[in-house]
Image 1: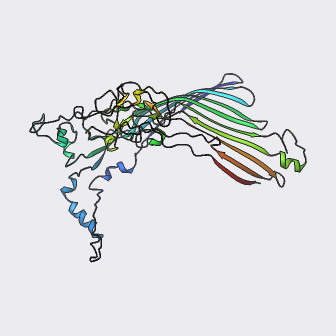
Image 2 (image 1 turned 135 degrees about the horizontal axis):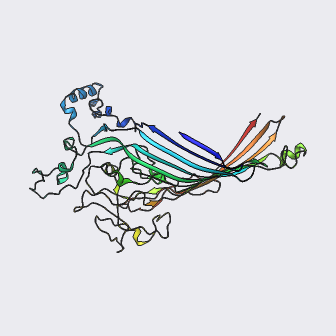
Image 3 (image 1 turned 30 degrees about the vertical axis):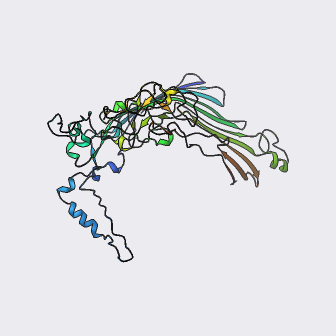
Length: 460
């Protein structure tokens, strides 16, 4: 790490820094190669339920041993349908993150300062999951009696899957997954950060923070944000494990504008305050010892990636999540936005639900449509990551304190808190699946309802 600060004059200071951090993230124990056979195996069995005339056939502990013995040969390595195998890239490298900043701070007066700075970050070799056994090209569809380019007959799904399957011998009787852990994801973050800070004077202190930023990456890794925030809840795996840049776009936590603020104000009445410092005890118990504080949290919405029900057969993890990327034909025009129609009521917001069709049920060009289909099978959707935005978030909390003096400097402080005092409704992400009849509908909130709390604290 390197850093410097330069006091230009008695009111201005410029600071800067640069650092490199490396880290080897494991992505959870579930991706370890010890999860593969023969180190790990699971067996299932069902006993016979008892009836009025029979005691049934309960399973004993010996069942597991018998199953293990029967699997303890070459058949253990015969893949079953839907199995997953874990591998780690031999070129796996620790993540390298570079961070840098340059900030100027100006003293407005003896108690108040403002800082304006640039903050940046670049991440390379970040770990991620990859679906290595997905198909690398279209599956040629064959008519009855047809042959594949390699001279063999049709395989999975009536096509020549083995021609475009990187690990065809792993297929067995079904589409099995090969989960790879690699270190190829990149990310970058650039931000303007402004901080106004007022140190305690005349009973008032506050700090206001504003960030204007942009965060981009081509993979969420294993710990991406969940769907309630506005992020793609199926984002641990890229759409195409062989084209990570196809997933390059706004990070799931990319809120373009963020504001946070805190403030505390001691009313200037009563004991040791500006007014009424010598007032009688009974008056001080009424007028003195009052304090008000609050905080605010506001940010614009997180990215939304438009999805559809899967219609492609590419053996990719995004399909296992039950969704795939939609096609985008034209930019979405949002008008008359509401919680019932977050993407608006413009004709372009009505999706095309048939593959390859670009005109919707209203007879208008649609912004988003269904990929894949009988003649377009095994294509990825053309929609980019984060083309739309979820609703923003806002919450303001207030607290009121009243101190009652007891002995010396000791006091009893009553505290009244109001969380989300204005009862703002900050909405969760809308339905982002064009195949759903509730596409664009918001049916949940992220913010809690107004909550009131009363407490007492004795200071001594």
